Length: 226
Image (tube, rainbow, N blue to C red; front, side, top):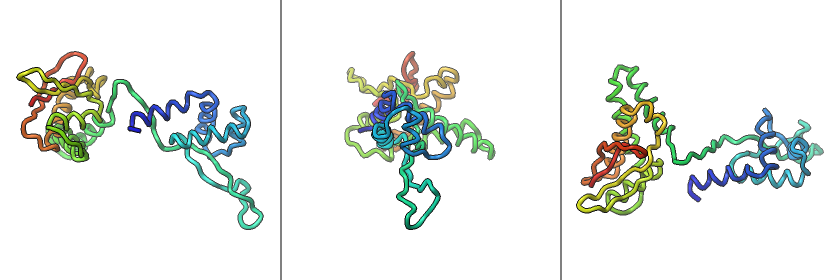
């Protein structure tokens, strides 16, 4: 299952009202809790709580630890109890896809460099292009330049769509992953988009594909032309 599918599965696990009550109780506690305590709080039998809690563990929403609740150790202390606590996994699904963590990382790194005396516009351009190159470096797919660029950019929510209208072969990016930020600061975000997409092409060692600004409503401001 891909990353988006994993997120839908995890969120779908909370559609069950019993599971949602159990998750809510466990995450409200500062310490890990046992099945019996969680079952009592949710108003369900222990065997039912065990099933739903373990399902939440499978989905990565809860984690398990084993500990003796009596505090005793050694012979006669009994078996450690299975306890549940909130996991560190963050689950969020946005439709269309958004990648605010990406643009946030670029902005934070650029500001750090500017505080050290570097020009902020230059730092933004270099950080965005470096992020694009890094994303491309992890790609191992085949195809021509536009196919490979589309595969990388799809992973960040750009929703690339390849056009075949002669004599132009290009890649339209139907979604801006930074939409709300772009609406408030279009010049800033479009510049980051252009450098990021250009960095992807650099990282893929594309010789014929070029990123250019081509803004239009309801899509990314960048287009890739071959």
